[in-house]
Length: 305
Image (cartoon, rainbow, N blue to C red; front, side, top):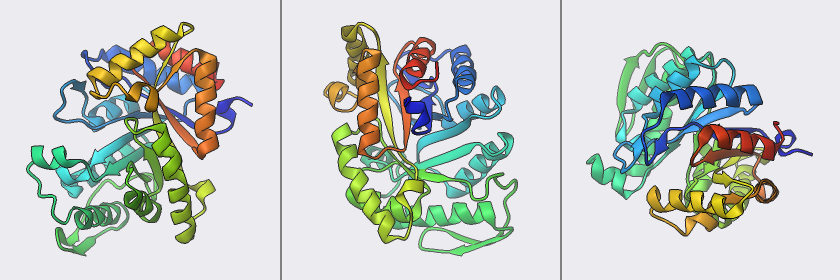
């Protein structure tokens, strides 16, 4: 059975690169991914970055305008560096404009986010919970009243509402406590592309146990992994391309083998099947170069072509 027949599959848009991204490449990948049968398109959020990176709402809005059915996600938006009021409105507008295709991935962020944006880390988990509550209320209630430690609203209205009710919020976190939090609060979970495949294998049982404890069915809960990939009939070429990505973008050359997947189509297919065996019921395939060409290669690997 082809991988596409086992689980839904997403693919990353060209959006973060050591070189500027060509908007025609974004259009071509978005439209071709939709035509091939990929379920969703994904981007990241990296505002102050050492490489080129689009704002997620901007590039997903563009992708929404040139497609009709494929879903549109960001993994992850660091909520602490935004107002939850702005996140709620931007993503409701994206969902409205795309006719119900948005998926918001959120995270606590890392130390550098708080330093760069001059946001205090103290109370960050409480703030995160409040932000989720405010966003969901603004999306679903005609009028929102909320009083917390960090946010206070009295009888406020927001329009438009998302088309999706409820609109899905996924979390991209790795710490065991955060994975358990995702099981309680989120509508899906995605292991980050920079995290190792071994870490994913350790996180899935933690997530499943927490879901069952919360009375939620793990089989119906999206459990995903972003996978940076390079495929070539010459495995040394594929590895060199992925190694460049992890070295230049992540400053983590060890991630080439620990976190990414590279090699021939057969080798790539085998490694993706291993992730499914670990418990992934969704995968985000993220080419790192030659996007249009690699999209076709990945489509063949998973059985779309």
